[in-house]
Every structure is written in C-alpha cells, then in structure tokens.
Length: 148
Image (cartoon, rainbow, N blue to C red; front, side, top):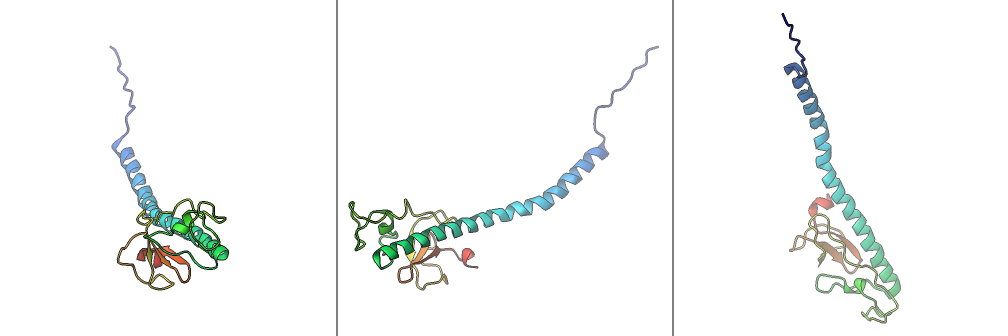
C-alpha cells in the first residue's frame, strides 16, 4: 500500500482574511495623508513662485524707480531687456528678470490680471492665473483657496 503525502502550500482562509484586514488598516491611515499632499504641494509651489515673482519685481523697481506695468495680461518688462527708463530694448542694460512667468499651480495659467487692492480679497472676473497690483508690486495667485 502506498501512502500519499499531501503538500499543503496554500494559504488558509483565516490567513488571507488577516492579510486583507492589515492592508485595509494601512490604507485607511496612509491614503488621507496622500490626499492632502496634493494641496500642500500646490500651496508650496504657489508660495515659491510668488516669492520669485515678487523678488524680481522688486529688483525691477530698484533699477527703474517704479514697478513694471501690466500689458496684455503679462509683464513684458520682466521678460525682456530694458533701458534705464523701463522701455524694452534689445540693447538695454537691465533684465531680463524672468525667463517666463511661472504658472499658477492651481490652474497652470500664466496670465496676470489687475488686482483691485494690494491684498488678495476677491477674484478678478477671470478667475485664473495671477493678480498684480501695479502700485505696490504685489502679486498672488488668483485663487481663493490660496488666500485662506
């Protein structure tokens, strides 16, 4: 008589259930942290871009005695060489201050709109891009979720 030995290489139902429960507990604790990381990344990027824009706008003011003017939803004096009077000139001694306007991370827009005051209080009629206050040089994302 021949004895057949069984090789049990499979998992039992209890072992599978324990693994599923452990994975569910881990997912419940880790997934909420990833959900807020997107918001944190956008906020951090907006702050960095805002700081870069503001520092270059201030450097422009130091060189020219006034803040750059908003033209066609952009700041062309920041993107090209300028002379001492702030006029765009290929032989200008100043600039360019920026290679490009960085995008607003909330909507990836680079357009700039005139702000009604020197602090973010309301969206412009075009709720995207950046707001710029030419009298103070202030610039910030055109998104209420950043203002909170």
